[in-house]
Image 1 (cartoon, helix red, strand yellow):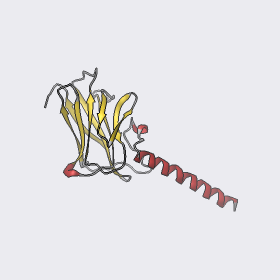
Image 2 (cartoon, helix red, strand yellow):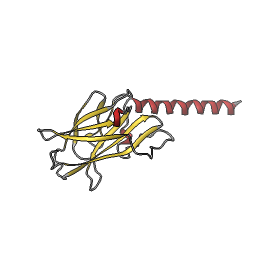
Image 3 (cartoon, helix red, strand yellow):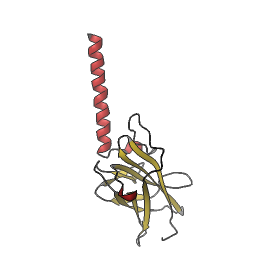
Image 4 (tube, helix red, strand yellow):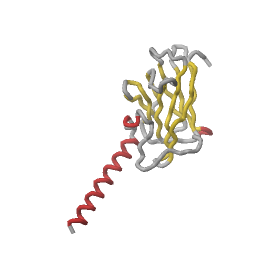
Length: 167
């Protein structure tokens, strides 16, 4: 009887922890994924198929850039993480300074180091404003992870952008 009670107690504890982790990510608490950009969905890896999502970049007159994560053909997604990285060394560069309501700016090694979802509501696109600051690398690699469901997500969605170009 004691063994049975012990296993039930352990099962309940593990279940509660798993639910809390999943709820935390759905509310937007993904700072643990800053380096890997993997959402940490227990036991599930990213999709190997081509992502039905993309990134586009629009320069603004004030020297910042509007970076948009979008679903192809209005594809919906629930979660995302977006970072700007130096393509030569893969370090995060610049800072995100604003984002639409469905996202929020987070601290990934420094304030504004990434943008992520704010809730698990369906989205077809989310835009954030990125400031290169002191970064003078010429090119920047925007990198995203997009989550359609707990079991379905894509990592390594990349858009390289030449900061010298104004297109």
